[in-house]
Amino acid sequence: MRKLTKVILSLFIFSVLLYGCGSKEDSKSNTGAGNSQPVKLVANSVWPEDNFMSQGLIDFSKEVKEATNGQVEIEVKAGGSLGYEGAELLKAVKDNLVPISEFLAFGVEGDEPLYGLGTLPFLVKSFEENRILNNIARPYYDQVAEEKWNQKILYVATWPGAGFWTKDKTESLESLKGLKMRTADGNGARVVQTIGGVPYQLPFAEVYSSLATGAIDSVLTSSPTAVDAKLWEVLDYYIPANVTMGVSFVTMNLDEFHQLDKETQDTIVQIGQNIEETIWEKVENIDAENEALANKEGIVSLEPNDKFMNELSDITEELRKEWLTQV
Image: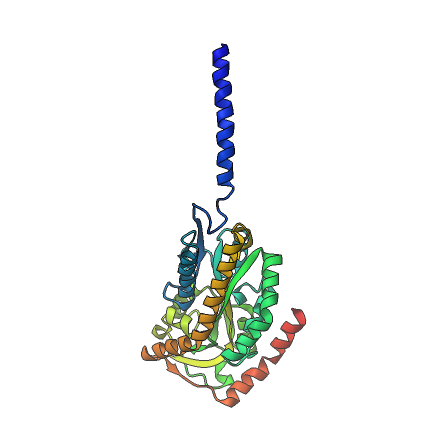
């Protein structure tokens, strides 16, 4: 009995020592580039893999893996394959249902009105003006994301301006009236309503089928999205009116971010800044290339004249004032 007791006691002491040694190693795990076990994360994009937003996220993941010597691996799931999209993405990242995601800032304005800033109609008229606006707004975007929504904005990427994609020629304010137009956000819906159309806020995945069945007859969107949806198969004209110039955020759950060591955090932030700069530099060419592709496939571009643009700006002035008052 005494021998048995000694054996049990010895095993107990050995296990305590073994646990103590192991716990020191375990405490270092999942903190960043200095670990033996890589941190593996999933990143969501609702856009097809060849869309420039998805490609930006893929480039980001590759650079993070390389810079951290494979200790942070980010698997990009494109095409909305994770099942999260639209307005739910802000909450999905907040709750860590998906640790990293790209989402349209204006697509979540129902939960965070500040993020609708980029789709105030005719607030900016060029990529240069849009960059200035983003630089002014970015500290406020960051503050709200971290303090209210438990996430870190890794980078902000601009979209080309949204224009009108239609079945019939629309070269005046009068010709826009009565159109059943798909919009992606509340500001876009209010624009369509103000010009006399009927707005339909539909998910991207439902746009083509809705056009094919006649549920809608026009779309307010940018050229890359039009190409993704192959709008030339169901529409005929494009009016590049730069109604809005929205941005996308790529964010990371703040709890996941804080689990990384400071060096790894700084590395990821720097890579995000580099990707952001690259996208902003390329977006004007991306816009031109996508419009040219749509033209090649049969879409006719109708450049709006000054009178048309002034009418659009004037009729939507109250929308800009209302947003400023409310937000």
